[in-house]
Image (cartoon, rainbow, N blue to C red; front, side, top):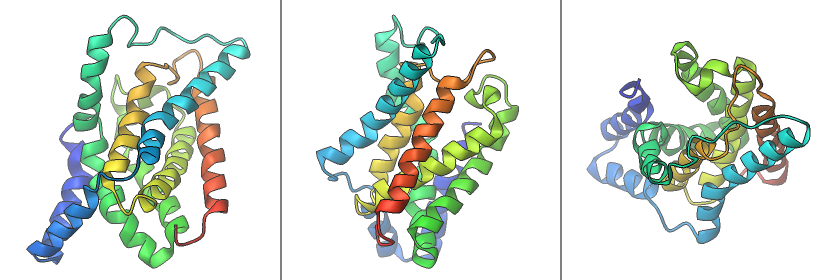
Length: 220
């Protein structure tokens, strides 16, 4: 599973290397690794997932639901160590050079950023399907339709973020890492008992993505 998770990024590097000269590959990597994106975008990428999950958990509790003990509870050191592990092995590093570094800009040049982000989101969601058949993954208890809806909505937000940071994959890496990391602090992922809190997260993602699609012009 970990080896397969690096497929999109490795594929992007191979394609760029085979279709561009060395200077082209360096220029692509330089754009992807742009880290001077402004503190506002750093804060959005890191903290907006936490905000959405906290709101969802609060709504769930207000409606009489229960939130389980966070995996991070009582394990501060392990939680801090887990953050870079999520970046390196939890999906972001293996995926984002492919999805947002290569596929998004190529598709949006042909289709526009809206259509490209929606279509890429569907591909991104389908790419995760094997996880639904592997015991112990977060996807085991998530309804497939709800998961696909969340991924398509996230793809719109990823495209908006990357386009406003001049193609920075670093921004996408941080956003992806935050999305995968914060559930260990705010446990909103579905369980056998309930997926209402997760449903609130998805609803928030969809609302934000619709607002972004409506508010920003084709040239994001």
